[in-house]
Image (cartoon, rainbow, N blue to C red; front, side, top):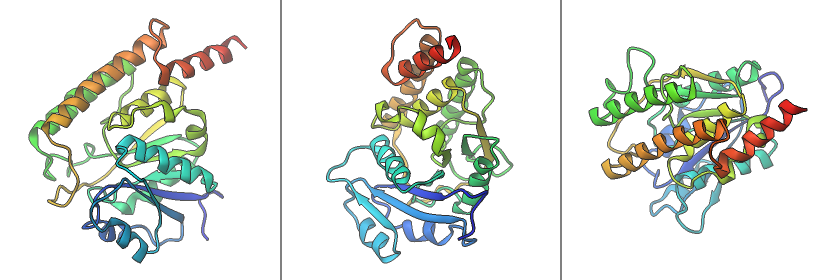
Length: 261
């Protein structure tokens, strides 16, 4: 098996009713020998996701009830770490993001320059809007990103991509099991990583918005947006010890102890 600087690469797929897109996603994964294993976590799908995963030979972990997107990611990362992964790439099996970038994203971690890498739908000429992202979602994405950059003092192009790579050191260090079981998990783990001083990188990623790609509706988008704003304020208050927030407080306390030591 070809390895990136000796790193074991595991791709994890948080799946829910991905039967129509899973095979297309799988077929576009790099065939360069870098990927050591693929793990799909099925969040109690009502379609044939599990059957297709079995046909493709993908290791599958099944939830016995629908636990939510954040809970699905928690299982993904725990399973990958149990297998001894050095770099974990989380790819949605809905064929919205380009699977071909797995090697490039893993290489950014393997280089030692980054601890977490996000595939940005905003960078580049062919961005999310030109690919078909609904206008209200694009506008919300830009507003929330500017707001978070201001509060967290970062310069990211977006915080809301569902295509990410992590080092094992980052996942071992963060109490991600304390995060939400819902979509806001994505923002909380960035806040945790930044608070602990991990290095965040981005890569341009073409995206597709097709009828079979998963997408949350307006009400859930609104709930997510409010959660993003809350997460940013929690980060700021917790950073300056003005508020105790479980998923962030443990990190800040540990950081203070290290600085005192």
